[in-house]
Each structure stands twice: as C-alpha cells, then as structure tokens.
Image (cartoon, rainbow, N blue to C red; front, side, top):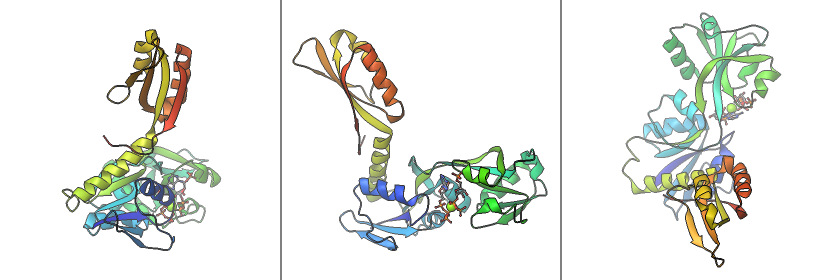
Length: 282
Ligand SMILES: Nc1ncnc2c1ncn2[C@@H]1O[C@H](COP(=O)(O)OP(=O)(O)OP(=O)(O)O)[C@@H](O)[C@H]1O
Ligand SMILES: O=P(O)(O)OC[C@H]1O[C@H](OP(=O)(O)OP(=O)(O)O)[C@H](O)[C@@H]1O
Ligand SMILES: [Mg+2]
C-alpha cells in the first residue's frame, strides 16, 4: 500500500486536503485522525506536522508527502520535488527593525532568530558570514522586541506580520516556497501506485491553472482567433449548422483568461464561455 504524508494542520492543510479529495482520495472525517486508509485506492494517509513530512519521506518510512519547499529544504532530507502545488506561496527573508538600513553583510556577528536554522546556516556559509542562530519554534517576529535576537529570518506571505512588528525585510529571498508533493528517491520511483498518485495530483493542479474556453468564430477570423487560443496541442475546431461560423475549444491559462475573452470578443467571436477544469491527464 502506498503511504502518503499530509499536513495535519496549519497553513497548508486545508488546500492539501482539497487537492487530494478532488483527486479522488478519501478525506479524513475527524481532524484528530492521524491516519486514514483509503481501501479503494490502496493508499494510507498519515496526517503529520508539515515540518516533519520531509523527514519521514526522506527516511523512506513514507513514500510521498505534501509539505512546503522551505520546510523540505530546511529538513535536509533527500527528497525529490514531483509537483509544485500552487498554494502556500511565500518567500523566506531576513528582516530587522525598519528604522535602520540593513544589508546581509551587517548580519556578521549578530543574533538571528529563526524556525528554519538549516536554511539560514547554509545561506550564511555560502556568503562566508558567521552569526549566532537562535532557534525558535514560531512567532519569530516578536523575538527582537523581546531582546533575544538582532534580526530574524522567517516566512513572509503578505508581509503583514513584519509590518505589524515594525520590521522590514532585506536581502534576496533565501527560498521561494510553495506547497510541493515530494517523494522518496528510491522507495517510490518504480511503483505504479506512486506514479498514478503523482499523475492524479498533477492533473488536479494543472486543471486549477487552466480554464476551458469555448466560442463561436466567424470563418474568416479563425486564423487570428486560433493564434490567441492555441491550446496545448492545438484547439478543437468544429463545424456549426451555419456554414459561416465555426465552434472553437481550447485550454487557456486561468490567470489571463478574462483579458483573453475581452480580446476574442473585440475580434468578433461570440458566445464565449469559460469553464473550470476539475482534473486532466496528458
Ligand atoms: N502566511 C503565509 N503565507 C503563505 N505561506 C505560508 C504562510 N505561513 C506559512 N506558510 C507556508 O506554510 C508552511 C508552514 O506551514 P505552517 O505555518 O502550518 O507550519 P509551522 O509553522 O511548522 O506550524 P505552526 O505554524 O502550526 O507552528 C511553509 O511552507 C510556509 O512557507
Ligand atoms: O507575511 P504574513 O502574511 O503576515 O505571514 C507570515 C507569517 O505567517 C507565518 O506564521 P504562522 O501563522 O504560521 O505562525 P508561526 O510564526 O507560529 O509559525 C510565518 O511564520 C510568519 O510569521
Ligand atoms: Mg507557521
């Protein structure tokens, strides 16, 4: 049976559960459940802290897992990133009190509070800087005010928490993160079950990033319209009862689909419809 780790709570858990459910897997009925057996799909899910997921997958105890790229990186576990899941996006930045100008070189000899000590250690080593790392479990933004650190290194989503605590980020991002599906390099590589699981998750994520566009197109505008909606391989073009018109169908990126619909309408296409793609395979 394939064994898969899923975040049991926190920033990633709800969206991870949503993708797995959309991919056809059994949901847990009680948020306190730590494992669920999906008999129909021959998969056992383990609900773990996101920070621990890569440790289990790296050790080969579990085959696949959902976690943050930053957490997987910090764990040092040897895992392969199979699918970027498109949620839980964040950057990992150094930050310090906003009333002073900081550069990364100013961190030399300072105390840096973080929940991601290995990411920070590696970054400092790469830069040839020495600093003291203060490992905290969370609420890192308050540590400077409390006097245990001079600067911090932490996850930044909207930036609201930094601002609330009078901090400003500086230097480049140490890690551009999002939720990822990871696998153990050996245990899952050859198994049909792992490949199928990855394909299903990939299908849902890909579906979320695209929409299906259908529209009616005057025959003489087809070339221009098709250039705007090339689809993945090529668009489907079907005859309509009226010989002057054609029906066109193509997948387009969700991000730009509204402006594309404006452009198609301006060109002369009619009855332009966008619909969600719940899942797909290639
Ligand atoms: N505000 C945020 N915006 C976007 N992504 C975030 C945010 N906070 C955390 N993340 C991402 O979520 C993951 C961490 O999840 P979470 O915060 O649930 O774990 P944790 O900090 O270990 O647990 P907890 O906060 O319960 O102690 C990381 O990959 C991180 O990049
Ligand atoms: O930029 P923002 O959108 O404000 O989000 C960033 C904050 O969110 C996370 O904290 P979380 O809520 O997970 O608490 P924690 O610090 O205890 O992990 C992260 O550690 C930052 O503190
Ligand atoms: Mg957190």
